[in-house]
Length: 273
Ligand SMILES: [Zn+2]
Image (cartoon, rainbow, N blue to C red; front, side, top):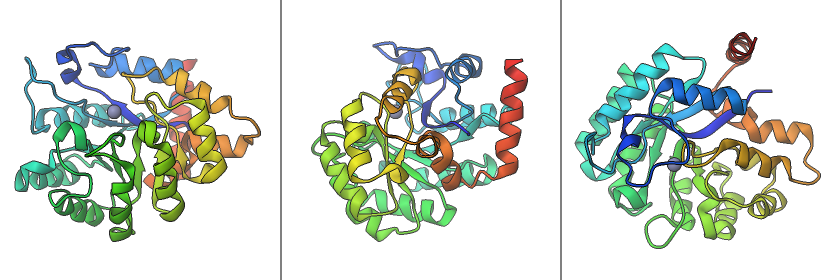
């Protein structure tokens, strides 16, 4: 079994936060320590939100570069995801190109509330055209009215059938709507991070099934062990289905092949022994 955390933040921008995150993931070493103690083999890793302060990086360019340096040194642990602000237009597209061609990133994170755009608004379309071209999965922060409601993802999922979309946080209090989107769109996956409750996870399992539910923690804002515990608490979840949720499905979406998996496992065992 491989454990892939679909939602990991890392980087120096975390030091800016007015309210410090629960855990420390400003450095590669701090993040790997969390991975190791929680049994995370690989993390889909992207920049934290930028709050200003000493580390100023509203274009995410320095943050993406940081993720690249980490993924280069620890290719077996970090899968780099690009982060851009769609409102920046061509600058965002240029940064995506750098992330793909220079950095070898393999996914995209977008946050409608933080970057202030409508999840299905006009600024996001060119960004998704590019993500489709690159074959990247796209993880959206989803949650509250008006910018990031999960139902806004439905027209996007229909317009971009080749993109696999992840709706983060089970869309907080809008889990019921997220379920409707996932039921209708097979390229939509619901991701467990943040304060998703064990009950919300159960609802997803009952309605959508384990194939469209993926584990993500939102580390360092959330303790990964807590999220895994909520998955472990699910009644009548088979070992195979649990393995799919914890990493099997993400491994498939990212094209991690058997060789990658055994490399990851060997690396993990090496570190633990
Ligand atoms: Zn997050």
